[in-house]
Image (tube, rainbow, N blue to C red; front, side, top):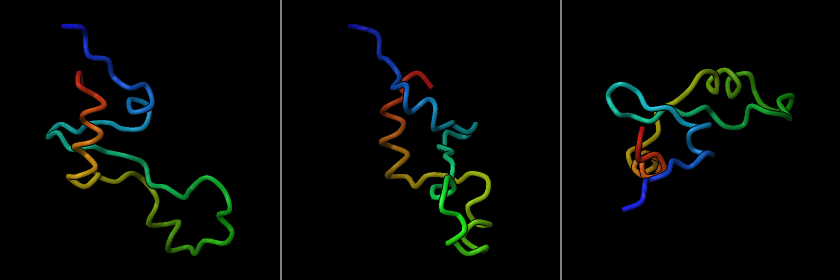
Length: 65
């Protein structure tokens, strides 16, 4: 059986925590920030943990992680 390859786009965007959850960056923080409220920008700081449904998809992209 051939080696399973990790999708390059997934390894750049996601990290796995020690307990197996998937960490990702918040969206909507690149441009047009003047029209977003301070609350929206503040809540988008740091990272977030993906939901179980999304995490399952991302983990299938990273079989060796």
